[in-house]
Length: 264
Picture 1 (spheres, rainbow, N blue to C red):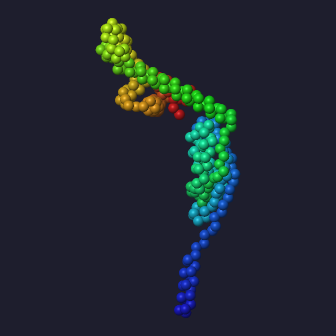
Picture 2: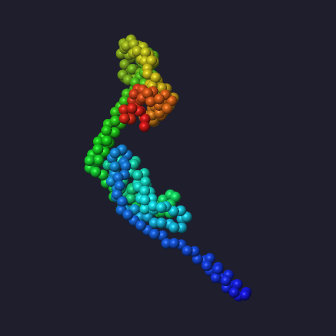
Picture 3: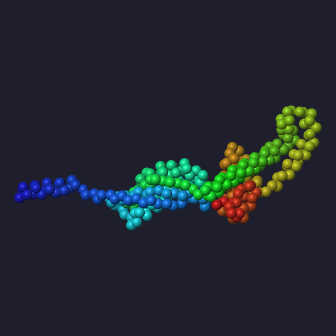
């Protein structure tokens, strides 16, 4: 009986040394789909081969592993393309190929997915529209920069130069090569300009609001000045309603969305 018991223990121990692991299965499918670009309505055309395998030891399951794999690859691809312009499709194809080549587990499933053979292109008609869109953005950016420069120059003259006769005279002397006699002769005209500038104190509340913030933050860059206006418009829209936000946007030169709202 002792020998039999020892044999049984040895046999049971050997059984514990081996663990059955079901083999993983691999699948693939060619898939084509449009992918969004940074401009709504202008899409990339994508084609790639989706590869997926099932990890049966993961402890989780998914009833449609093929759909889970394809959906995950498309989601990963969108995260790359939706920030890019259509005209960059050639370089973006390699970036997308690099991103999708990494095999990753689809969250919450036993599916692992990757893609290869990535092809990314765009219709010529959409490319032409994308080029026009870029040109409009460039024009708008230049015009906005010009307006910001004009506003900055006006604020400088109004708030720092034409504050009193002595400041205005010194400013004119500096800008004209210190021609003292001409400065003395122009004193009456400069004094009149100072009085005219003083009458601007009844400006629109939106301009006063922006000026106050920019005076408190004199080191703001042009880009941050635009961000400041956007944040103020958003706050006014929340607490004052769309009409107040729209009035503010019109006064400070913010673009409107669909002709109705200053912010998305």
